[in-house]
Amino acid sequence: MPTAYILTQMTCPEVEEALKTVKIAIIPLGAHEQHGPHMVESCDAVLAEEMGKRLTEKLYPEAMLTPIINMGVSPHHINFPGTISLEPTTLIAILRDMIKSLKHQGVDKFLVLNSHGGNQATLGVAVEMLTSELNVSLYYAKTTASAKDVMDKRIESKLYGHSCDREVSEAMYLAPHLVRPDKLEKGDIQEGRWRKLRPGNPLQGFYYYEEMTRNGCIGDATKASREIGEEIVETALERLTQAVRDVL
Figure (cartoon, rainbow, N blue to C red):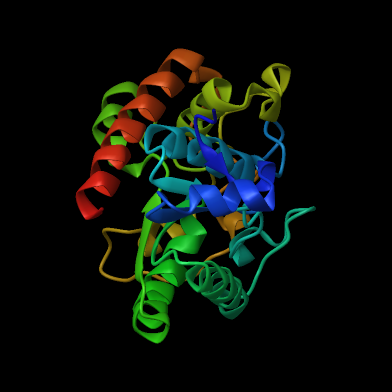
């Protein structure tokens, strides 16, 4: 007896049986991009999938986890080696095809569970386009954003969000193999126009990540811990589970 419906681990007859109770498909979405010297570049993709597995398990038997979209919209990281970035239109096209395929099989509710901030703007557009175009209910959520109160309490860094104390802590709890513990660094922040383009300012706009940080990190990863990660992740999972149940 399964505890979660994970498409990549199921046979066709098993999927057919699961679809009798599944009401929503969860699509994990990540990125493939630099995370400085102490995290591997698949970080966002792996964290999205691990959160997706846990959320799907909590929603069993009403949720199904799709294959992960392991690249995202990452042009701001493109000058760091290894980063692979999708165009926003490419990401929307992938989502369209995945959703069309699963709707054909009877699923009409979808949650994109996203772990990369650079995807959020594209997801806002995708939801507006695809909800009406495909006649489905489509939602998106950042994996741990609903636990911001925990982050504000536990994360000391004022500037965090990428390969930082928060993200490294989450990885230490969800997928410790993503972290190089002997190479943890504080973000090497430099001054520049980026400060005037951050959320909360009168203007927002595009800037390359190296304009903000020389080593590709922000925050202070040396202050990360598995304990902090567990509190953030478990709080977010509880809130996401309830939010999904509410729309079901």
